[in-house]
Image (cartoon, rainbow, N blue to C red; front, side, top):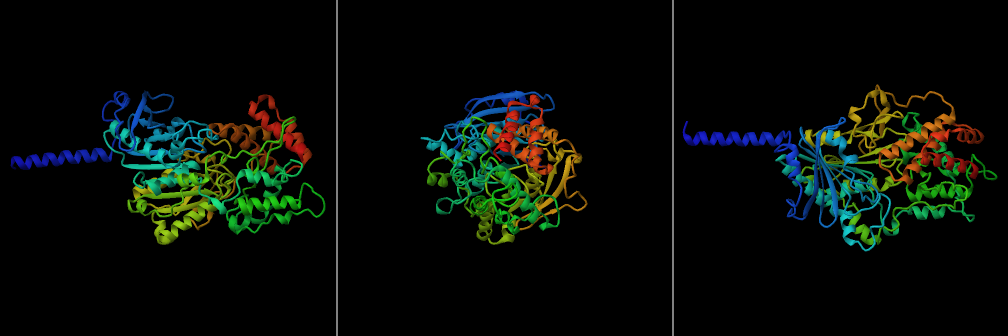
Length: 576
């Protein structure tokens, strides 16, 4: 063997070793604590198109069931803040970016990324270029750069920054990059597929916001919905209690359309229910709708885009909650107010470009999901977008090779609801990207109350099956949602308990869910009120029994928000 041959073999061995190390990265290039400290400062300041500054890099030793990690906090010029969590060992070679909701404005890396880091991912979260709560637009006025960042730039530049940080810390690029989020986050995902197709190998976009048409064909805003439900006396024409009546009628009419009586309408577009079926024959009463109330309900279905089965989500979102004694009637909250000039917003925000050829051609995969009971982002525009993509990209079969839509019956905005809403999204997109296993259906799970599951079901693969009430397979559009053979198709009937105790449990559980998900106070209160109405619905008792049960709830043990929820329900009883 010649010297040249030996040298070539040695070089080949080094290259092979390097390739193997890149295919199966395990930990940082240097000891994790030292490597974490070296990330601070301006070493990424000349990153093309994303000048990045690391304000702080903190090594976190393993503790309380959490693996050791490096927390990186920084910003991309001018004001796009972000944070990353990098596992100190056993990195799986994957990079996941989590999106945000509402107005964003908060960096919540621990909330968004902790479970992913536990599972070996490097994970990033951004505030989208401004500071705010999830539910205010105070940052908009005079802030064109902020609108640009929120519209499309922030996700892209922080994704690029995160990739450079990963390479510096681990010594190699991520093998696979994923995006996963809902609402504003769903919009972020589609913007990435449309404008920055090289950023991600796989994208999960749930209930993408800003999809609805603007201009003449736009649906009525929440403010407009509030106005057409306001009577001459200043009170709601259609009160919350009547939403419960409409829901019961819709379920009675359409629940069995899929052959299963599970309290969920699986085919809302095929449901022939009309609010006029409940028209009062004489005067207004608890069990019927006046002509004005029929008109409001019809507008919510026909103009706003609400689907049969979603009626409980009208409460507090489309229909005003009752006022407390001495409190004036409060208009519905409308996040669209103050968001900026509609033309500018559409130009920067709208994720409705159906030409996904660059994303498809580089091998990208897209899972698009929407709940039929969504109240915040209406389902019809998402379906319309996907069907437009299908026509643009060469038909259903060609589109399904890289992008699929799944409609989930009974799922509220992003998560929750009466249906099998908990889905292992990251597992599905990973198998499609890395193994070529395109999901013909997404397996959905309905957790039992109190199940140890996070809002976006990241922990679903770890959850014990004893916490599963029932399962359904949500087939890719235009397929249906069907029960899973050999598994329960409906939730077991809960053990009977006094209504006042059921209401207490309900309000505590709903507050826990809203708090864990990081909801604003207003959103958590609405969730609590909706859940209380659902408990009254299932109990199916008369108004006198409902009033007595609310009065018997031991509010002393509740939080201030819990006490307010019970008090507002009592106000609803008096209103009716």
